Image (cartoon, rainbow, N blue to C red):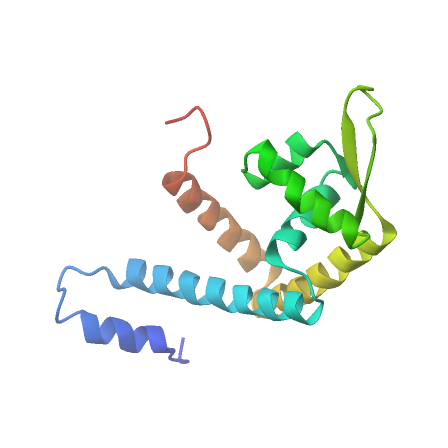
Length: 167
């Protein structure tokens, strides 16, 4: 690899200060942070241009991931929030015409939340911008390299955050 990046300068600066610094670990961590920051900035710009708040996007995303319809408790679980916290989000999205409340098909006492065409379109525009940038960035890797990277990051992620019940 001949292309140097700012992370190599960072490592060179810190190795004399922290002699037991593992340059591969430090390099991987800093690069993951920089990549995460870059993708976050792209997402934030896309949401701002689309006049979507992060919490609105997150709720639309959770709904889209459930086929466009879910109980508020399911949305809350996907977002790792208390179910009571979802009400205000849903209210705001109803006012914008992005979701509607409808009777549940499985329990007549329950009300589900459903994406409207406008909500699905807003979510698709936002995810399109973010997805295009992810594809652009990871496009420098071959499909095999992307698969290898994904597998390695999976192992590291599992070490950092064991699945529930495996603590």
